[in-house]
Image 1: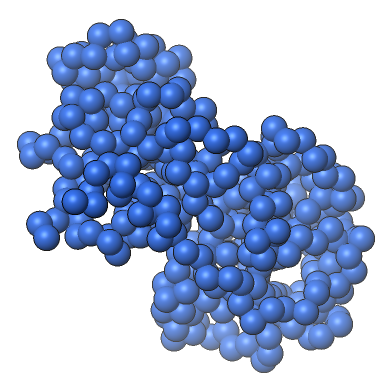
Image 2: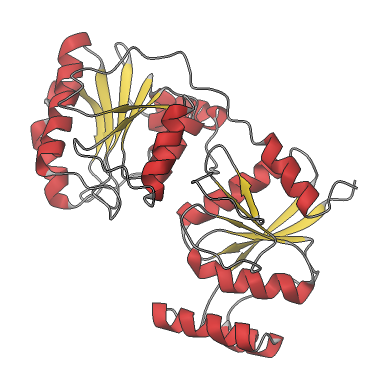
Length: 341
């Protein structure tokens, strides 16, 4: 079969880009693809400017106007068979370019409201609402796979002096978000939890904060965790390093503060047993899509939720979480865009 030409619209967010790449990795298992990444450069980078550009394109969907609004954007001469994007800043370009080229479009996201009729299909986890253009997936797409982190583990061991003496725990630390709020007591409970696990079984920790972790919170962890409990650590605000794949590959168990859907998804996708560290007080608002996603992961056996301070020690690690199977979702997408023939 001749490869299908697919454009990924890259709005500059790595977190969104990996979702588009992950979706196409799964689609490529069913049909050969030629994937081209197209960078979006809007003339109005601010929020108000992007909103204005979106309104102008919807009112006057003309190529000359699109070119004026995106003067540095380099478009391919050959028309695509499919255009894919993820993230709010790519949506206007996705809608315009798909209609201009007369090809289907897919938006990969779980939390952004997309007006009906804007795109051919929206691939997202189920969050309680059905819509004609929704295609539900068991887990957000990511570039992480067990093979990817296994290879990263071997590189890490060959390039560093670190040699684990027993089981390894990996901890990814984010920060409070609009939808998941940690109190100061919650952070203290997580620090005690890390120390207690080390004292109980001697297993050491690989720990990394993230770009979202402020320096005050980072210092709290750095000063509160017993030095002997730490096998290796990245304090991102002081000395950032990209260690996600390596730390996942090294892990016998992964612990993630519940605020980051990206880190939680990557941990599950790595094939490692994953625990979400939750605040002591959790609302059960149906409108909180973040909580719904984490709850569904737990109900489907992908993660275990732990409230440090209430749950003194983690439950016994399972051999591995269930296999992530996107095949039904991909089959539904191919039917939707008429690629089955």
